[in-house]
Image (cartoon, rainbow, N blue to C red):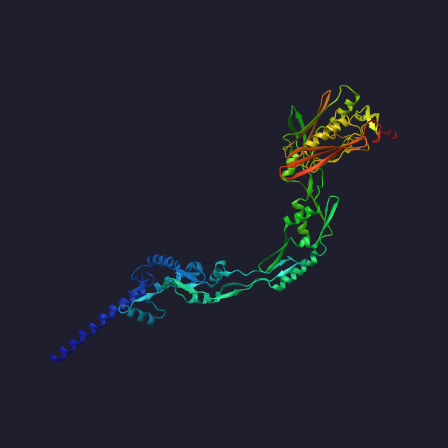
Length: 556
């Protein structure tokens, strides 16, 4: 009886000893299940660190630091001739912060009770390393790999030209060289930036032009058809037609996103039009000047002439031409903005006396009235370079209405009296001023009889309808003609900028019967180094109404 009770008491002690560990394990399991989301499970590691027992907030800071670190990982792409170094972030890697946090928080917690229990049961024996969740955004990566630093050789799009040909023709395009983007994406997708820098050797592929050669040839044909009639330009009352070649020379083509567009070099087209309309369309308005005590003053600036063509009207014509053409293109003028012409108009180049000549006469004769009247008419005449002055055209007939009076003159070799007689003294004076200013003396004629008040062989006369005195300003600067007079003299002064030296080389006198001929050589040396020599010729009869043989002339 006593033995039986002893065996029973032993079994009663075994049961509690078994139940206590179970209770402890159950309590631990219950705590593990209950703690999910509040703290990290035991023996869990992340990025090489034990994060057991940390709160999700603490771990989130570590994950953020890890994100910055990994997205800064170098990704090196070897192109052969160079290496492109980017960060993981730049190439399109995305750190999945939320997914990484979920993996950490759920470590040792399974989807099913049994798997979760097994994960918990192995806690003391095996650490769990939670990996970073990283993904490659292929669209971002593809866009980055398509940028120009991954192009080894740019493709050359076909273009249009008409060099060495009358028609437009297509210049074929050329393939470029780039990287095999699909290959790079496949390698990048398998790479793990958590393992450190990623290095890839890129394969090369040809890059075709966006526009085909066939399409370019079609556009060349289109342009040739568009330009086959050239361009009829109208400026004021003037017209000119540019040839197809003149238009095609300034056509330009450009390929954008595989589409070829056309344009016209407006500056080049404007140059063609200026060549087609080389002369001023409007008049040059000279400045108004006056000379006081030898000082030249600008009273009012002039205006350069209108020329072809305003750039705005050329642009409109170019756009209209490319839009389908028109029968003609009306162009507008512009004020000549050439610096030289502007200086001509503002009077700034009238700086100094370049020539001056004086002749004398008795006071108070009727011919003095005519000398001074024609002098007043020519006061302030302004000759720009290249401009020609005809005294007969500028002054016109010498009439009483203009203030001229009757005075001595030579007509048909005989002394006579007519209205305007005596103006030849002014003509001789301005002739000599033009001689020493270096102007071209296009037309002139000496008196038929020599008068001692003039330089022998270097003088000229004037009559209606002829002879005339015609001179051209062949110098680089404008010339202001400024006559002045006293009761006994007439002076003509030319003002300009000195740019020619004049020397009288030699005078040769020969005879033909009783007549004498003078030939005076004039040398003009210009500032650009040019030297010009001309000869001034005068022919004199022996006396009033007598020919070279001493016989009377017919008096007509």
